[in-house]
Length: 88
Image 1 (cartoon, one colour):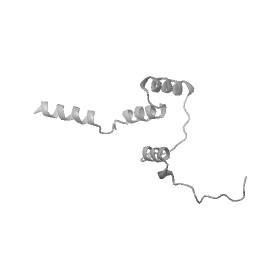
Image 2 (cartoon, one colour):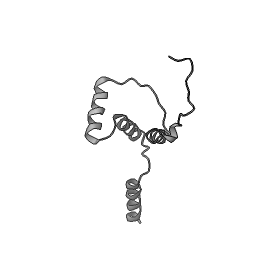
Image 3 (cartoon, one colour):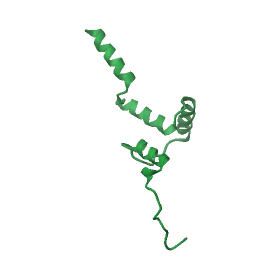
Image 4 (tube, rainbow, N blue to C red):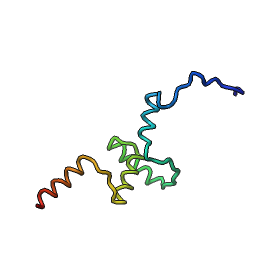
């Protein structure tokens, strides 16, 4: 290991496309450590592979559904609007 390194030509993460993308995706999220049963983790990994998403994304989505706090997206907004329009 060197005593000193030259960072004069280093780039900020925001200037490196794949790092900038990771930073953008992480906004509003926190990194944590959690212990899960092996069978639970295996199930999430299998289901995530079937859906073509990451298993952590699937865990987050499942927890959000349990809280009853689904983020507003276009499909949900259209559903609510249809229900409201038909009720009047």
